Length: 153
Image (cartoon, rainbow, N blue to C red; front, side, top):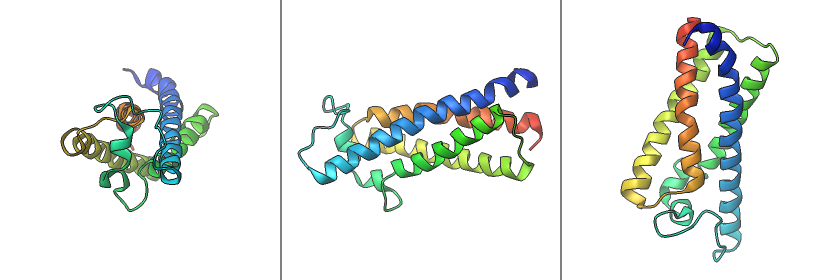
């Protein structure tokens, strides 16, 4: 992919991808709150024993840093959405900023890889909204890395 095409599509990947991730993280947060208020709450994403958000949300892994993981997603995807929209509006950022974004996406992809492993091998269930976040984190990481290499950050 040439530099001009990458510069044209990258902010859209950030904006659209972050919007999807933000929506999924928000719904997961609302489901967690509903489950805490009413343990009998029927989750919208629990379809069967394998596709079961409840099993995932109630696991220890769902609060890896002592608070619900979707809160990390709300913060991270909000930041990425803002960056994507800012670039579309003509903003440019310093190299140190892009190094921070790269570090954030590296953390994100590492965390997602750990969560995928935990979901498949420890919890034994999948969460639809989690999978949406996992799916969008990979292209955001990939295109951020490509963009940073092409721009020399």
